[in-house]
Image (cartoon, rainbow, N blue to C red; front, side, top):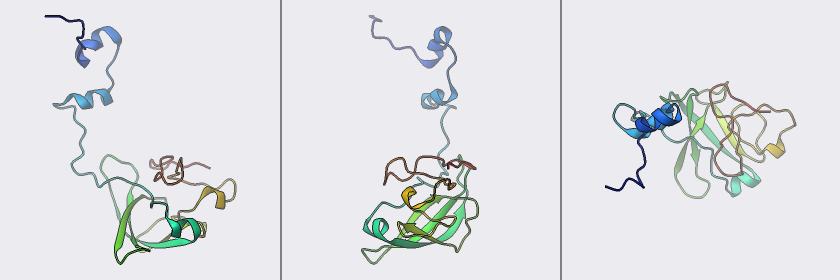
Length: 151
């Protein structure tokens, strides 16, 4: 057999190159699989729409849940759709001080209160924030871990 295109497995490469990181072994199968069975779902902010760009949308925190494999708790926030007769549910990463039954406002005209979502341009300089969007509308990618923040 011709071994020119032979790619070594992780356990073979470790004898030559160095340590295999645990994250690399997760794709290998057997006992090194990531445990995702009881995960609650993807966390993101609301999609940027007309109501959020120009005014605000009101939502209610229905429950705060624990997600295995994540340090920060999650908030199930329920919004009434501004465009059709239905209820939208979103999973937010909780900020410290959020509670069930709290009204959460998302949009340009929302007040600067713990739990509300508003553009960085509307906040004074030095405001402590979490779950920050890198680009407008991508759902929040920066400072999402438990206790993480940016100013």
